[in-house]
Length: 266
Image (spheres, rainbow, N blue to C red):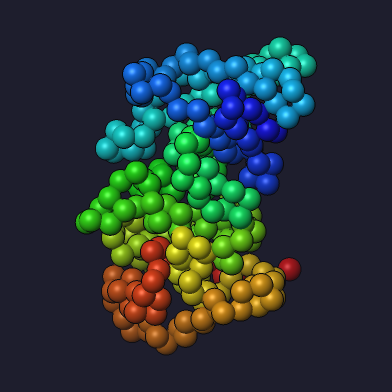
């Protein structure tokens, strides 16, 4: 679905289950709305067929999962032109939450962030929102480092976008453990998971193994230079709490790492 709003663009990508909706058209400089003040905002839109559509921010609330109280969850609805009924742009996530987090810029079909005047509403079931809620807030800095690329690396990791080309290699409900050198997320000891890959903003920078064995042949074809198996003995007899430091030596350009369960081939 493509929506045009006063020269701006709203779009949803079916490939990501309509989890992200983007818009440009910033508010005039004399008007600044924050948090709950956005509640009730109405936007008149035109879709790709030239039909007028209306979007509305139905309600806004602080994200209870954000200890810093910086993240707001928006319920955004659009008016179906056929039925005139209001429908949520988001689908319920595993917690039955159907809300969105506004983020600056947009993401193209290859998963690249474009820093423009648009605003993306990332639904809570999307990789974009999950990474924000895990602490990778792209508008923040930590220890002098911007978290923008950490957020981007996290989105690649969530979707198992190994080659950084927008192609996902995961399945809904797949469990993973994510951790990073900044300590935003820490590795879970004795999780039963095995190290999978090290990630940067452009995809995996080092792949020890793929989340699902059948993916390996495709990775060997598309980005074989990223395959770098980590021998189990490299981490043997080591205090698990030190493994992130060892992994940083294994992949010095990595921003985040992840473990996952070993899956049998189909």
